[in-house]
Image (cartoon, rainbow, N blue to C red; front, side, top):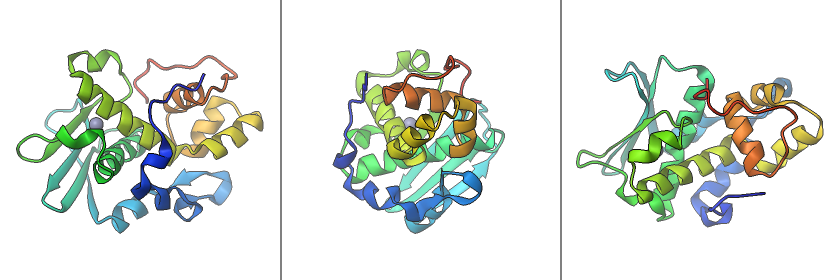
Length: 195
Ligand SMILES: [Zn+2]
């Protein structure tokens, strides 16, 4: 039951960054080097203490200058997903997709609790909800490439092991397995806010 509304091949700016050059395959890991991607794209990355601690990430665009701010109190895996999500908006904009109306008049986009959706998106408009789903789709493909996830799954790894291997939360891995139509070995904790 693959249920993605988006197609990877539509995001041509993203293609390069999905290659093995951007994967850290040391010590049995399969983790995407998001810092390297941000550096190459000239996106400044800041780990900050937000006044509003419910924020997980902020994407800022000022002409051609891009910044991603992440909540320094979040777990490392959560931070990685937030960076990947903000990069998702970036690539969406590059390829002229759904994130066009993302920014407020000062060029900020704020993200809260990316994983506790859909409940948190009830206040969002349908187009904003789609833009968030699109960013999550790109994030999932950056962090959990289909081929590698399938190989681990077929290698009988459980969600916990796979989350560790890919450097994501167990709920992120659970969603990914569902979206790829793979039956999880164990029940998936999708309601825990993604660590
Ligand atoms: Zn977002």
